[in-house]
Length: 462
Image 1: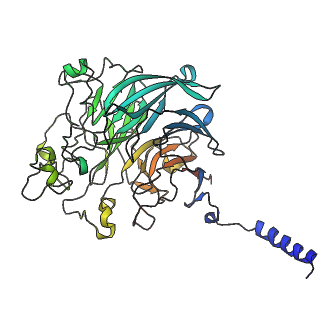
Image 2: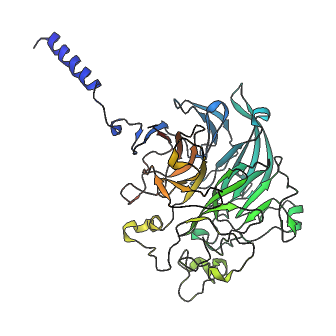
Image 3: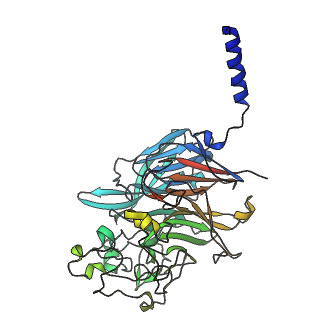
């Protein structure tokens, strides 16, 4: 065969291959999913992305928890611009670092942006909310002002979501720092403790754990915040474990938080409400959860265990806590009977992956007039443990969860936040860089498919 004929044959083969409709898995940036959605990677390699909002000019603004940066990402081509670096941020392996962000309601005029992060004051770890101004010309966040600093922090359960309400107030979710469980089980859980008048006057925020706070935009205490035990503070609600998502639907605030071994919760947040933790997980039903105050157990640090005490100790039933201010969730993930098996052998040392929880990490609202008919008027929740998106339909008055729970876009990832596009045709997801997750076969995995990536699942109109 002559060289001319050989080159001609190669050219013909290339042309034929170009006409082949390659399957999605042949594209390294494609994400397997099912009709009528397609999935793809928008950008790779973010450094522990944690918070995500729609910023200026249709761009996504994302916080990097460990990268200590706020970056802008063009959702069309993945072009990234660094808007801010915060060296003061103290980051840890999972719960500490640069967390949530939100735009001021009048951002078009004020250019104000609010962030929160953990930091060190000497040997003490703390948490703060900081206001910045966006310089559109320089594409930078500038002029930081601490609006609420000195909040307690620890290695676990920071919370960290921010949301502005239609009342112009800033809402902030603060976790209970993981006290009373695992390595922190001997530390007193104070999600039920309320601040005293003396603490508020002294700006001692130690009782602000396991709470949702409500602030004025300059960090003050709103005059219409609830009086709790006769004291008005930043505390709006109490009894939360690890509140990882806040979203307003009209004037109603929805929240998701992670449960212990059962009973992740979807709540509607009501001023002055008590959401039960650590006395109650999910509903007060005396099923698979009972409160144990490990801090009162003799030689606590030498007693093996996590959620349950040994047989010679007593736990406290959920129904023993009769509180008028208690608010039930509108949905749990999931409430299990006391006979539930918490030690499924197939999960081995990662037994918690087999528990009846999804580890909700954020939520968004799919509007009642959105283009995807089946998704209308639904709360959309991201899961860390299952690497999936869960959709919870709401009743017409948006006061109750209604019908079944639907699961979408399962991949071998930990989904840190979900965000719906303004046109309702795309669902954006940021992924953790590392951790433990249930894979597509229902088995435990410590290898992420898309560590630190921004994914998008796009709806194809029929």
